[in-house]
Image 1 (cartoon, one colour):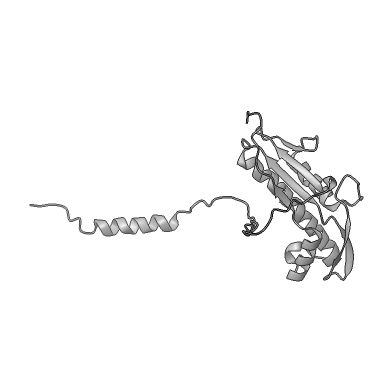
Image 2 (image 1 turned 135 degrees about the vertical axis):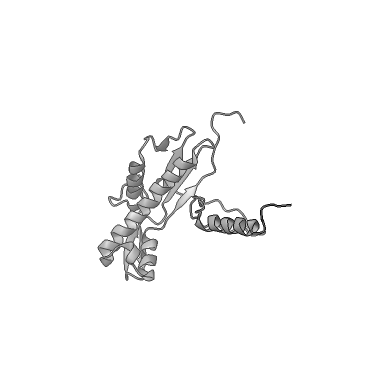
Length: 190
């Protein structure tokens, strides 16, 4: 009985599959690069840390994706600028983190830094992930700009071109301290 020769159909299908797998790009998940703290050891006690109120910058994002810093509702650019002011505290404002003298070995001198500052971000469970990422990005941008400004002033080149020792010294001056508080669910009975 006459018919079509289908002996090579499997080979052709396999070649098409390989072609599409190798030429198709896969989307990767977006996220934040964070180093999580080590889990507590069995015998370790919970120690409550007390942080002075002036050393904390509270940022809250509600379920309507409105960002609140203190009593203001800033834009993303304002978040970055206010975070930079808070981290640096150039004018030694008593409502901002206290300046502490710190010996930076690589620089060979003592520098006044806001060593004990913390930026606390708290969201509502209904906050959009995209808004959360934008707030985090604004904070990271603030740190990156401060580090870059210091590198340009101190070493004459951008932070990305600094050697490992220079980067370590700059990270000692501007340590990234972002605390992510557990999301809350407001407006619901407990």
